[in-house]
Amino acid sequence: MPRIRWKAQLGAQDLAPLVATASASIVAIQAAIDAHQAFVPYNAGGAQQAVTTVNWPPQAPARYATTMQRHSEMVALAASTAAAPPPPIWDVNAAGVVVANNGHVITGANYVTNLPHCGYCTVMLWMLGLPLGLPTAGRYNFAINLEYSVPANVFNNVELLARLFNSNAGGNAALIRLKRMVNPFLQNPSAEWVLQIGAVFVSDAAVTPAAPPGALILDWTEAAGHPVDVNVQNFGRNTLLTTLWKIVYQGIYDNVS
Image (cartoon, rainbow, N blue to C red; front, side, top):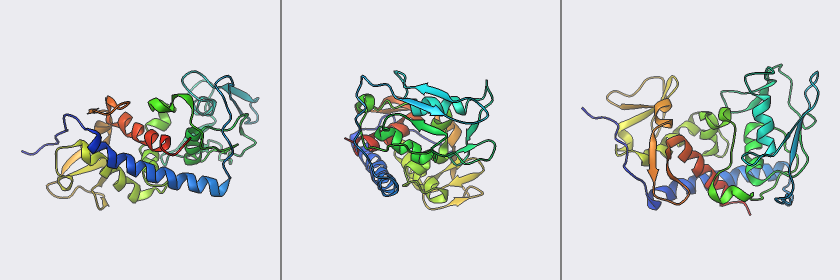
């Protein structure tokens, strides 16, 4: 009986089209950001430590500094959406957008960073719907290793990941794009299998409420944690989810300076 078969290893020739897709998406995302709010120079040197302040009355302002592993913007987001304690004020919803739990709009007065955002933070804040302070296309120190860190509720959000590959456009088109990004990791012909994401089944052409007759089904929750081996520097052996994020980071890295 046919079954899902993963490739033993991917090489540069397999990865290049995936990085090209991510890069084109990031270019479109950056263009949308720049049209909304022009980029400024990135001048946050290594000796400077950014601080992001979250103002959310009636709570007192909370300030979060950049750590060795995570920029202040993401430290603030992780703290503001953490399960407990204290109770979270915001949430990363199913669509991969940050929303306030009391229904209020999050504005620039509620979320403020004292230094310009790096190019990675700029893209991520835009994607998450958080206010931009000073957007840039600047490359931060660890970017060359594709080690940019986001909170778990961002990293695990499949809708956000799909939009990152689809110029921030969501819906079925983004899920189809994500399925196509997974194709090269499998030995099975792409038409032979569908990707199950929640209650829907994604082929290379459509999203349906039931799997096509005879199609092999790969559940995203299982696929995301599957180990894959990429014989390309800074990719290595990771889970599929980590590797797809590294492809996003490579797309950002290739379009920042």
